[in-house]
Image (cartoon, rainbow, N blue to C red):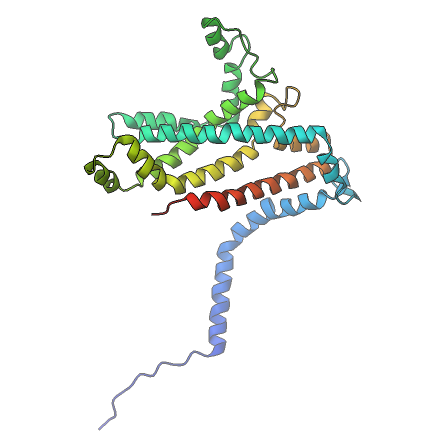
Length: 309
């Protein structure tokens, strides 16, 4: 009588496990290589190179010549032009971030209603997302024109004197901020609309059964449940505001009287107009530190008020 066959699994040796682990690691790195290569070429190397150049004087080709340590940083923080650029940048952020969020939230709440033809309004509200900064800047350039611009023609119909929107130091930064808010509404509107549509309807139905008003539901249900999306759009909009360049270059070129000389445009002008790459790199490092600090503060303070489902 033959004994019953019993299958005993073969013990995997340490060598086989090591080979399998190496094979999996190699396969994973091959998948990651395109991303790592792109990040290295377009992100990590420029960051390291910028930090390196911030401690040197450079020639017209951007090659480091003389090591000066922190002298570039000391020079820019004692420069009235750079301090003016910092002030204008923070004012620009204060103008654009709340304006973009509030207007986009208002439009998203309207577009989230179940009304006939609301799809057309959703398309119109998000249309600015498909317009390039250059094209939008040209559009606003005509609107702000002192003689043929629609805004001044509207003021003349109201018997109000015309305004030099882009050439008056009192109005230039505000005008650029208005155009930037208009450009950013499309993206922010779509993100907020997606957040609104992800809120469960049963919450509103339960509130309606209890007799809750529209504004009570907005304050107690919509805003708290939308807080993760609001946290995201506030962070992204703030970072984009600090990095604004295109509309400044198209509309004002940093003028008048450096009122719209935001820090990114100041970096561009210092590097590619004045050929002071060391000073421009120092400004770029300062901008990176400011954005990093603002983002950390946003996460520390803002995330406490975020309500996750």
